[in-house]
Image (cartoon, rainbow, N blue to C red; front, side, top):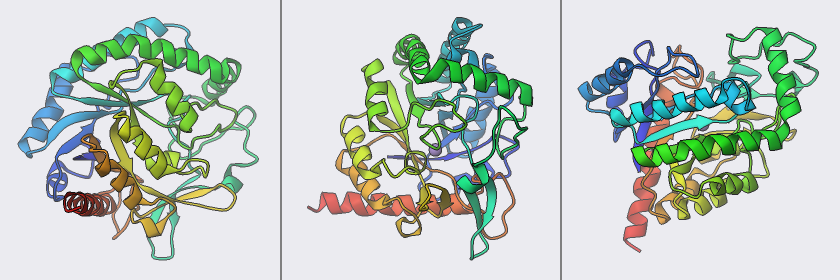
Length: 350
Ligand SMILES: [Mn+2]
């Protein structure tokens, strides 16, 4: 496995030097953040990230994310033009050594939480999704400002998009994903860049918006659209794991065996009785995900893709981007290292 860490670029309070000091750290996961979806990424920006990583003995070989323009997901407007731009961005990333690109096909919002700084008893804070805070909100009627939602849309634009996706429905969204993948994957193959789709977070519809990358059946369907190792998964244990219908170790085992996981996001969530969830520390006993079983399944299937500790809590007084502080993610990285070392040596001595 190749251990990696997400970095939000030069404005990130977490520095590349911080990242390079985490034991076993190999790769940096980053992106060009100052270009809008649907625009070509300047080579200068990509080279800058690569050079900065080089200086710190780190490798910039994973991108998260190249965003998919809403016109592609909706199959309207300048859809084909935006797919061409996307293909060009794959080529450009490949030029600086990128081997894996993460993306998602979630309508309008990348993820949904109701609070980003829920305080636990120990004083740490984390992201949570409580249905009691969500219920009663109607984005078609009310102005909604959930944390983390793209502030570049006006409320009217949000309403128009929600209406358009409602009309499109799940099958329409699948059709547009198919159109996208059949054009993109051949380019990815040519460039030796694995395309890793991030599951929907959470993996069920919110506000009537269709969600299609949610469970075993949908992952099977996705992988069949183009049956190529370049059409792969970014398996996020926290996103798929915040619904009780997903058996996370079982799914990891299945897709690692099939060699269709390019990138693992490892984090823990605590599922509550009403389906709400809280992000927790990475340790298995802190939440609902069995991280040991996940890593064991990866090691048993000779997984050689990328792994990163996903969202962490805010601890030790750190101030920064919710979910993306240094300390708790570094603890997560060290925990993940420990699980891999133990599983690998147990398997070797068997
Ligand atoms: Mn994730």
